[in-house]
Amino acid sequence: MKKSSNSSIFIIALLGITILLLGILVGSVIKSPSPNNISVNPNIIVRDSTDLQSISSNYNKEATLLFEKSLEKTIDEEFDRTVNYLNFTIAIFAVFLTITLVAFGFFTIRKMSEAKDLLDKIIAAPDAVMKKYYSNQLNDLLPKLLSSDNREKSDAIHSIYYNTQLEEEKHFDLISNTLEREYQNSTSYTYLNVFNLFDLLSRLNFSKAVNKGFEIFEKYHSDSTMQYIVPRIMESNDKAHKQRFLNILCQNDNPNLVNDLIKNIDHFENFDNEMIVYISKNAPANITYRIINSINQKSKQSLDMKSLIFELDSKIFLNNYFHQLYNILKQNNQIETDIIIRLIDRIIENDDKNLAQFTNMIRTIINSNISSDEKLFIINSLKQKYNTDYDFDEIFERFETENNPHFTAIRDQLKT
Image (cartoon, rainbow, N blue to C red; front, top):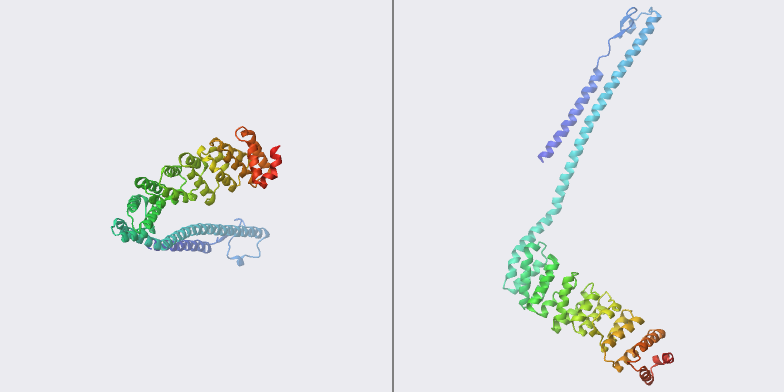
């Protein structure tokens, strides 16, 4: 406030000095004495310029002309002097006015800045109050995380969950240790406490939180420890996290855990072919099929089954899984003649040349809704490849006996 008062006094003083100087300059012009003499040729006349009425009418013509010229010259000089004074006065006025305006501009800007700072403080005041409130609340709540009273501890966790003053450097380890203790503390509050604590860790540092979840699982080997964090792990795009999850899925023999992991598989973003292939090589075939089915049914993404037919582990292509693979291709609108032929090839690679199983695969193709030309192409291609391994005449006779209308429609073309 004192600085503001000083600035105001300075501006008023500057304006006063400017006006005073202008007054002095203008006054000097107005009061400036005019020349008292009009000088004519000394051989003719020298008279006072203000005493024009006393000039005698008897002056000769030359004296009159000289007088007029002298008067005109005097008036011109007086006019020029007045104009110069006025120009000088205007210039001085402009300079002082510019200085005044600049000073006033700086003053106005400074005042606006002060007003903005004050307004910001007023606006920030509630936030500052709330920040202080939450900081004090957090200091009161943190010791309660170590409480032996489960109700008090649960209430503290719930309140901390909504506290905005948590910081990773200060609070991550404490919350992490509390989370681990809660996994070992089986009470009615455990599920909610674990969920809130893990979510708090995720907000502070998601990657560290996921690693903590894996650490807890590997330490306690309980399927219940994973069910809390699986949905959050699935959100991670970190390849190391996904690989760690796949290792748990493939190497664990706890059916409850496997079921829970597969149940949440649709949360896994970017579950690519590489992961499916890894599972097919390191987990039982039924788990691979369950995961593929779960992704197809629940996830927004679709697997590239065309590529998977070539990449999946050989144990996936046991004969009794043909229909599952065929249906998956059908669901993904990936039924193509070359893919079907490749699928059957891979199944035959792992089969004992069982005629009944091979017949069932042919029957599936005949009963499918693909075009007759596609059916003929697939069956003829298989016939050329496996004519020595399977008796196609016997297969066709079986279809005749069944009176299969789909077979009847292409029977003659197959026998040619």
